[in-house]
Length: 382
Image (cartoon, rainbow, N blue to C red; front, side):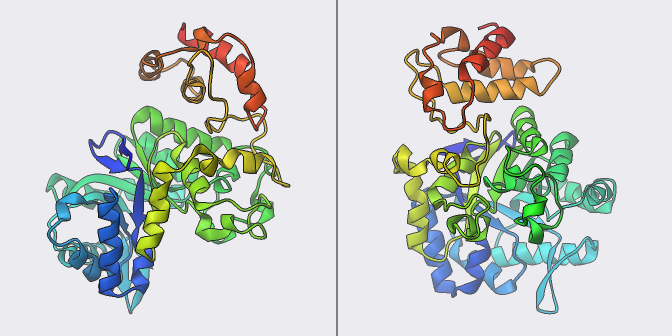
């Protein structure tokens, strides 16, 4: 299992994690089997947004004796009222639900205290300027949560969080279909054709900016909705008109700037092993780019998605990484020193490009790689 730094939190997480929602439909024994399999395969990050008391208790029993092996994302504002899930900003109900989470998990701290499901910019400001965020800060100061995060589906909110200086990481919806869409706070209508601004023409600029800001500012991203609820596996329901595989969706998420881990839902240990097989799968099994480039409803034309098809470079340049640093730098009036330092730390630079054009022949999206190499050389001076 490959591990990644979660922004500037100081935490190191498995690049494939577990989103716990599916565990709600299983017995305590089955929950333990899944979580034991995760741990045995190197998975160490677990998201628990669910307020259902039973699944919380089942998870607590499953991780008893090995709590230190897990990095837990626990949510503030996800409550159980009248036998059902209710999102709330009521501090009394929030505090009771959070204490319940600690009790049922048999722990005295949560690694990542997530301000739950903020999908409107207005709500973001209300939270950050009000008692809800003061409550989260108090929990952090007391050591009950170690880091403050936020979950959102809306890139406008994700951008505000990345710029805030207070939110240390975000749980964000990431998949190739969502990346084409402009900001929208109605998740139920995400796949409706009219919500795609200019059609399937490329990554929405705001979402692209979120990734770049998170990478640049050290705001780690953990990924939810990586499979879009399975809709991307079905040609009839996918906006591309072709199916993708779980491994292709995992690879797409993990190639976004700022992303540390994709959280996958599992019903069985076999599904855990299928996801973890990503670590040893050949590049051909991870190749989302060829599928999307040949889709009947095409996307990403002319736009680098850092997919790696440009490799191998005869000069030894990591072209995808050069492209990523170029994009990060070009979003600012001046290239940030941190981005320059990371670029210069590469073994080979754009100045080493011999202009053979093999990368452009292999690129499924028609990216003018040689042009971008020239831009990078001029911008970074190497």
